Length: 109
Image (cartoon, rainbow, N blue to C red; front, side, top):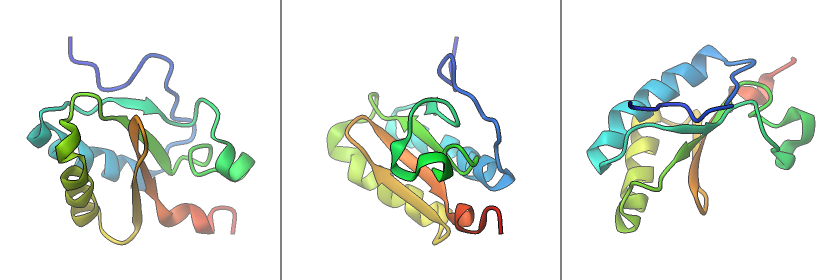
């Protein structure tokens, strides 16, 4: 069975902009031999922004990259950035890609 979301991942809240980014990532990852697998949404510990971390506000997810050839990871990040545009942060971490819509900057205002 194809799994797109790791067990236990929560999306509460999940902003519409984030859904658009997830769909875009789902079309690009297979080009690199990997299905989309979201490993974190609003669940887990994301200390960078405290309670205002974009994960907790529904603007960010983490995506599994273990099936992608390490030499192709920079190309994958470039393709994601190009497809998503300036309103997104695409950050290659040690074991995942952090995908974040910049709408969180105005959250609560």
